[in-house]
Amino acid sequence: MADSSNPIPAEEGPIGENDRLVSAVSGASSGFGAIYARRFAEMGHDLLLVARRQDRLDSLAAELREKYSVRVETLRADLSKPEDLLRTEERVASLRNLEYMVNSAGFGGNRQFPDVDIDLETRMIQVHCIAAMRLSRAALLPMVARKRGRLINIASAAGYLAGWGAADYTGTKAYILTFSRSLQADLRGTGVRVQALAPGFVRTEFHDSETMKNSGVKERIWKPLWCPAEKVVSVSLRQINRPVRTVACVPTLLYKLVAWGGSAWCLAPFRVLFSGGRVR
Ligand SMILES: NC(=O)c1ccc[n+]([C@@H]2O[C@H](COP(=O)([O-])OP(=O)(O)OC[C@H]3O[C@@H](n4cnc5c(N)ncnc54)[C@H](OP(=O)(O)O)[C@@H]3O)[C@@H](O)[C@H]2O)c1
Image (tube, rainbow, N blue to C red; front, top):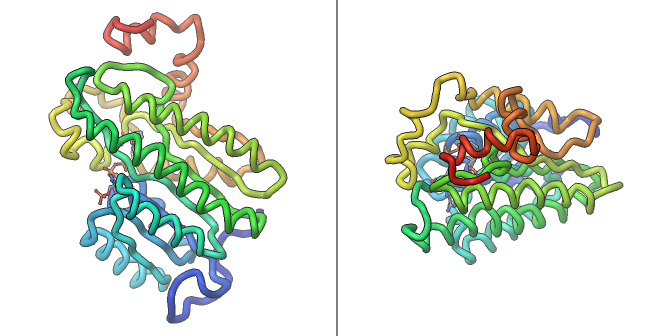
């Protein structure tokens, strides 16, 4: 792939309407999404930042304009809502020089079936699966036309496992892993690369959100199992720009073992342990 830094200086006007490179990030108001946005701004890309919290998007946009002289557009959207998703898709598909698309919007859950908030579980499928699938397709339209681009879908090491209180979380992340692998097969010969990033425990705002704050994960999970968010994003960007076409990206050796243990027959005892002795 050609150099992904922006060769053309920023001018006034909307993003995506000249030859400058543009990157789009969903879930840009915090966590991984905000870190990717900063990395793309450092590369000199103009940006489309999507999330629900407009104040967060505005302050990130101001920081990036000031620090990197890039143009930043914010789009307030709840990706569980079809009308907001459609607006986002249309904007993404219109970005002629789309270099990176990152689908990072997501959230966790902490209830066991059947005692779940079924609307929340449905929203999780809408944000993790439907929105990621539709925004992937929207991004691929300009990318395939240009014969270059990078699509990063955030899955999770949990997508390789089964565990209590996480039926839809593990299920949706497994979908992202398989969906992304199959996408790369569809994109053979187009010059477009796909990644499914599968991190383990990472300290972002994820575990403080309304749906996770009583999970006790932050207190219960052993310190060495947490990985710094900046490191996860660095590994992701390094891997997607390497010539070897590996779709799944599992940062750190420990979680590579977890991912492998999710399917290796000899590690069935580990899976039983992870699921509290409930699943083999
Ligand atoms: N942190 C971890 O341990 C971990 C591990 C593996 C995978 N992941 C995955 O990484 C991704 C990013 O999470 P994070 O760790 O960066 O957590 P985070 O800091 O809580 O960020 C989540 C982002 O998703 C956005 N979002 C949530 N619901 C949305 C909706 N309905 N519409 C639009 N945007 C929405 C949030 O923005 P608004 O609230 O402003 O909308 C926020 O920007 C998620 O897909 C998560 O499953 C996280």
